[in-house]
Length: 79
Ligand code: FES
Ligand code: FES
Image 1 (cartoon, rainbow, N blue to C red):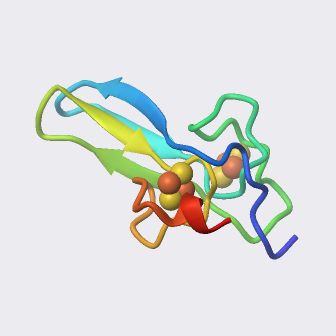
Image 2 (image 1 turned 90 degrees about the vertical axis):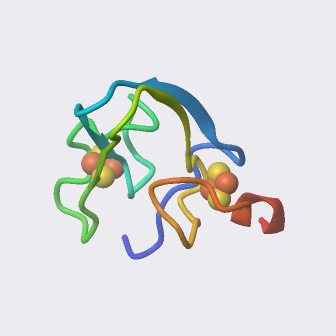
């Protein structure tokens, strides 16, 4: 596969904890969206690590087309 699967055409709002690492699914095949569950195995996709310095709400890209992955940049509106 060379194109990611569109998991959903909107972001996932997730409360993240300061200092904790999250691995965003880039391939779109994970059943634990927006995070990687290992389903990318055998594809040319790898997850993207995200670490926040503060407890905050993050809008992770669900469409997998963001230019600012792993966070949503509004690109889903063009799909
Ligand atoms: Fe999609 Fe790992 S399952 S990047
Ligand atoms: Fe992908 Fe917004 S959900 S850019």
